[in-house]
Length: 419
Image (cartoon, rainbow, N blue to C red; front, side):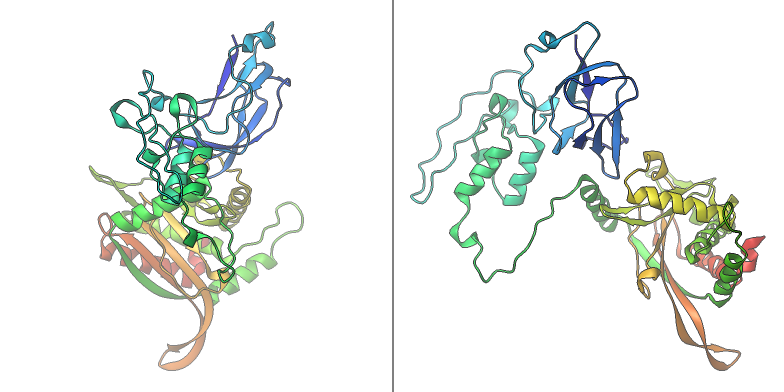
C-alpha cells in the first residue's frame, strides 16, 4: 500500500503551510533522509525529508499551493514491489488547494436552494451546499480571497468535491459582482499587490495582539558611547589574521550589556503568564533581524556567559541564516528579552512593540554627536538613545528604571564588560 507523505507540523503553533517547491518529481527513487520539498512556515522555509524509501508515485499537492493543512497528504511513495497500479483510485493531477479533514461533510450535502431573481445587470450566484449545521464548505484560500474582496461565501455555489468552494469559484463571483465604479481608470495611481506570506500574516497577528492586549509603558535613557567606540577600535585593531579573526560591532557590546544588566536585575527577565509571573533562570537574549519576508528574532542562549568575540560570531551566524530562511524553530523560539537596533539606519530613537510573552524589548537608536554639559561646561559627545518598552503586568516602572541604569553604566564604562 502506498505510503502517504503528510504536511508536517514544523512548529507547535503551525496549522497550515505553503508548499513552495518540490525537490523531486514523480518516478524518482527516494531514500530515508532525502529532501522532498520545501515548506514555507510562519518564520522560515524548511525542507521536508523522507522517512521511508521507495519511489515517489504521485504528487498530490502542487508546488506554490498555499494554506495546506497540517497532516494533509501531499504525495504518495510506492514501496518495494509496488507499481503504478497501486495508485488506482487516486485522482489524476495535483490539487492546488488541500481541504481540511474536519471540513469534509459526514453525509451528502443537501441540494442547493434556488437563488433570488437575478438583477438586471448581472446574474446572482446560487446558494452553495453547506455542511451540517449550515456551515459553508470552502478552502482556506477561497475564504481569504472572499474576505479580501468582500464577497459573502454563502452566495457562491462551490464546484469542488461535495460542493466545496474553491479559488476559481470566488474569482468567478468577483468578476460577476464587481461594480463598474471599481474598475480602475487612467487617473488611478498604478500599484502592485504583494500577497501575504505565512510569515508576514503571523507577524501581523502577533503584533496586533501585543499592542491590543499588553499594557505597554516606555522608558528612555541617553548613553554616551565614546569610551565604547574607543574600546571597539582597540579590540578590532588587535584582531589576528586568518583563523581567530573577529570584528566586534556596537551591537555586540549592546547584547553583552543587556545580558549583564539582566543578571544584575533578574526581575526584568520575565514573562506574564495567566497563573504567575515567570522569572527565567537563564539569560537568553533575542535579537531582531530584518529579512525579506519580515522580522525574525534569533536567540542567543546563555548570553551572559559569552564574551564579545563569542557573541559576535554567534549573532553573525544566526542573522545570516535568518536572512536565508534557514533557521531551525528552536533557534528563534523562546528568549526572555529582545533587542531591536535601528541605529545603523540613522534612526535617532523609537519605541518597539513587545514580543509576547516577553516583558521587555530595548529599542536602540543611532549614536550621534550631541551637545552635552560635563562638569558645568558645554561640550560634545556621541550619545545613543535607548527606549525600553515594558509589559506593566509583569515588570514595574522601578524595575525597568533599574535595568536601564545598569545598562547605561555598562555601556558608558565598557571595561566592566570585559571582566
